[in-house]
Length: 150
Ligand SMILES: NC(=O)NC1=NC(=O)NC1=O
Image (tube, rainbow, N blue to C red; front, side, top):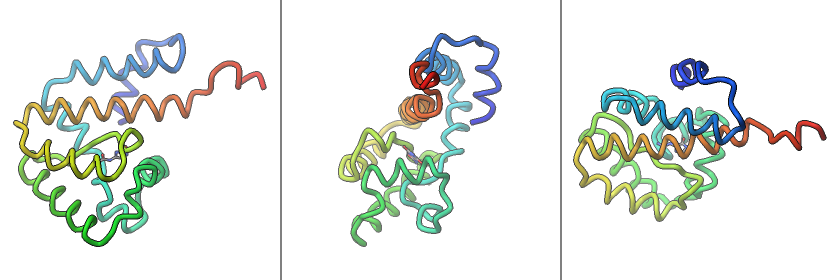
């Protein structure tokens, strides 16, 4: 989310990647519910039409594959599509979960369980998942000093 990056820039210099990630997390935490919902609306569905069309970013493609979402049976894919549709119809933003910390069974279970939550709860829960995704992507991007000198 480029707005988050443009905002967090003011906190520079950063001690290391973890400090950078926590600045992103703090910024997301301080957003009002509408801002958290906005960030969630920027995320593609899990195993959704973009994934099936091969139009996900490389990061999302890798993350969703690591959860096994690219090897679902037709029944699992249909269940995911139906649950994603119900979730987005109820909350007005997509279901977001850190795919690198879950496998497809946990994701399908989490989607069914979280569908029962209140909207504000889900905006906060989804934003916390975005923070996990963001931290892992930052750690991939920002190499530790030891690697820089190699
Ligand atoms: N809707 C989503 O949860 N999307 C994603 N989660 C990830 O970890 N990567 C994604 O693209």
